[in-house]
Length: 245
Image 1 (cartoon, one colour):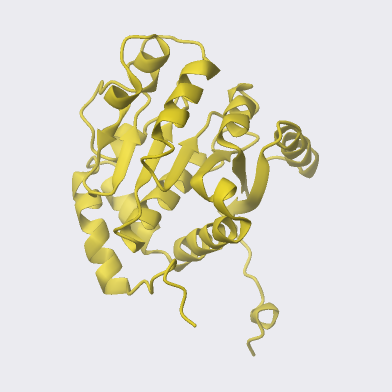
Image 2: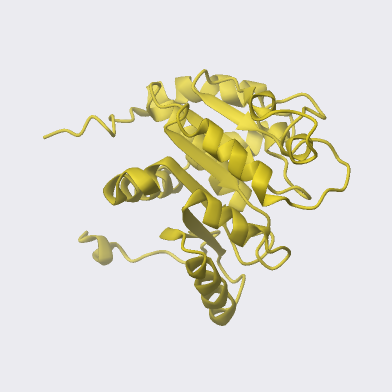
């Protein structure tokens, strides 16, 4: 029996659905985003995470934080990939991407928002309300809460909790990009607020002990660990492991 929750993703139709998003991206981002979204490994990563969310039920399927132990491991890339693929593969699925990396977040640029678009920083400073922080993207069913302005601001969990509570009835999937766990405790707070998390580990990045320690910290928040995605893997998985010869 075919599961309507996961419509078949024809390459041509999916490419057509993603085209407006790529057209809106900044000139610096558009080429690598195009490569990212066309990679078979990207589709496999999205399908694995999305299937796991579906299997885990309502709680895990609505909000997820993308976390990592260190910087440069691919959190933002995975957050963008999950949001873009979820919206493009199912036009009826309402997706919200939240950039909660207040220091280095750049999802607004990647999605073609105007510079200095108001977002999470302004919300945490009390200058705007949650609805004012949400911006439309080039895909009609994908919205974004950008990082916001460039002024220094400490992470405040209560405004983010208010935002997540307010958007819960409006969106089918909320994906939150976080700062690196090694740089800020905000990643743990965000994972707790979201209720579930997927961890990104860069190949030859953190040591096994560092990754395991951070994963244990995330688990202690009570967030449900959906899975782990290895980024920039350099080795090839032998075909026999897939049952191929």
